[in-house]
Each structure stands twice: as structure tokens, then as C-alpha cells.
Amino acid sequence: MRLWLSAFVAFSLLGLSPLANATDNDHCRAQVLMPDDLKQSREIPSPDGQRRAVLGGYRELKDSEGGWLQVFQGRTLLRRFKLRDLSAGIYLKWAPDPAALYFMWSDGGAIGGYHVRVFRVRDNRVLEVPTTRVAERDFAKKHYCRARGNNVYAVHWLTDSDEILISTEVYPTSDCGKDLGLTAGYLVSTDDGRTIKRFPQQEIEEQIKACSAF
Image (cartoon, rainbow, N blue to C red; front, side, top):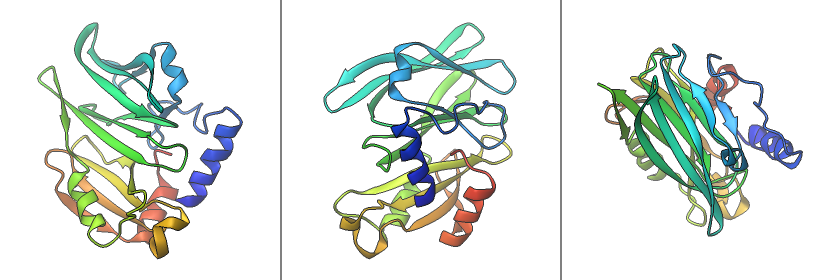
């Protein structure tokens, strides 16, 4: 995980996105943008081409940047969500169905703090679902950086929108103590955040290397 973060920093310093050429239909990788990209509308179609996620509405906030995420069915706007605390990489990926999408971002620069929001599309309605909360709380019971908090990442969707693999990480700086950079993985339900399977650090790192949003 920390090797990837170091690479992200290097690309950011060059003014580039490390996955700039990734397409939404790529099985693993997400579409990657930077906050400045929201100064113009950016469209990410679903794999079947029936829906679209549109990012835009760039605005400067105190110590961060913001914008909006709109979800369309054809030409019909289903819902708009406000985006705040954007500070570095923005990741968006549709599920294979595509009945859901996730949005991942940092509020504190290239190494954190990373967050994930998951949105499900049902009967032409878009609902935000608290997919990562249970996993984050479970991880924080034993591993938590009091100085900076923890990071949470979307790793990849499973075969459909019902399950997503996420990774939790103790913020990787020395003020987080002996657990700095420690990572765990959770396969979770997008309906209720229920944990389906846990992965220790070695296993989640193998999953990340094999198929990762980043």
C-alpha cells in the first residue's frame, strides 16, 4: 500500500494522474481525476452505456476543494450529490452490473485521509449506502492513529454491485506509532456494510497487486 502511495505522490508532483489512460470498462482500475479536473464536466459512462456519472461544479472551499457528482439514466438526471474536502486523487468506478458506483477521494493530500462513498441505483433512484462503516469501526478497535485517523480505500468490485472489496490502513506517518501503514481488507455487502470476509495484511496486499482500483 505504501509503495502505491509513494508512486501516487510522484505522479502528482509531475502533474499527472497515474491511471489517466484507464477506461471505466477496465475490470480493475478506476477512472482517476484531480480536483482541478472538475472545472469542466467529466463524464464516466457505466459499462452498459445506459447510465452516466458526471463530475463537475468545481469550487474552492476553506483548505480544500469541492464539486458535485450527478448520476444520469440516459438523459434523465436521477440525483446530484455534493462533494467536499477534495484534496488529491479522485477515483470513480461503476460496478459491473452496473447498479452501483463508488467515489473515493483524499481530504489531506496524496497519503490521506482517504474515504469511500458508495451509491446504489434502484428503480431509477440513487441512494448512498454506508458500505464501509462497519469495516472501519472493526479495524479501528485494534488499529487506529489518534493523531491522524485511518484511511479506507476501494480495491475493486466483485462480480456485481452486491459486494465490494475495501482496504483499511493506519495513516502511514511516524506520529501514528508502531502500526503506521498497517493494512487489512474486508469484503463487504453494499446493502448493509456486513462483513463477508476479512483479509490480513499479506492477503489484502496480494489482492491489491492482482486487481486494484489504484
